[in-house]
Length: 349
Image (cartoon, rainbow, N blue to C red):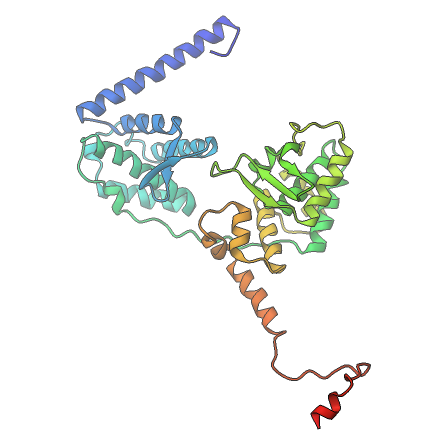
């Protein structure tokens, strides 16, 4: 029970016994082929706890991270809160008309992403009933998803970003310097906030200029090269903390949103989030001429650049247009201080 206190152990044991009892009842209902949506949710939660979740539109199962499990749990709760009668409903009585009515209510109250993921969960619950033989067909598969519109990115210019970091660093709070280090780290590496929080000095290779993210959203570790700004940042932090071992965390804070909000207001900059710093990294790389597939690998995408193109394609196009203006087939006049090679005039005549 992971406790030395008897009363705490008893409470945990009672809770654990209740979970086992619910799972057994759901499994029995599964075997009988007669299930409620609550039974389906119990089976689905058991799949989640074993490390399996949805992929894409819910057509497959794959290994998922604890954060994804938590999010999927939230969609189950949101589904039952928004449709109170559903939890106790026999799976055979869940029709397409009722699902479409729920869809209209939920989609008008929540974001497209939240709606789509909750719909995926509903599809998964009905798929469990279908696989158990408790019903035929999955009416949720016929209900459409919402279009997810790309977020309008309002990112700071380079000079503004540096002023932003300095404002955070000089804010006067006990963790101001650590918050500024986190902001710079996210902007210079493109890391997700959770990925950055798990980086230790053992993951930093300043000799070969590369960084390892062991804990990632997709569960697959990845290396990225250190851009000069990132190397300078890490070299400075390491010099300030010579006593740190390889197991020590590089960053001393895991989030800095409050400090970021204060600094943005102070310098008159639009508010940005931790994830926006990842966008800033990608945008800066595009402006520097790095190709989309390479940036996609650095960000940890596994789609070959499809998501990055959808998110940053317009920036790539702007960069390409600016570069195209420098290409010309017209003769360029030589500067006045340039002399022709010997014999060039004779050959020309």
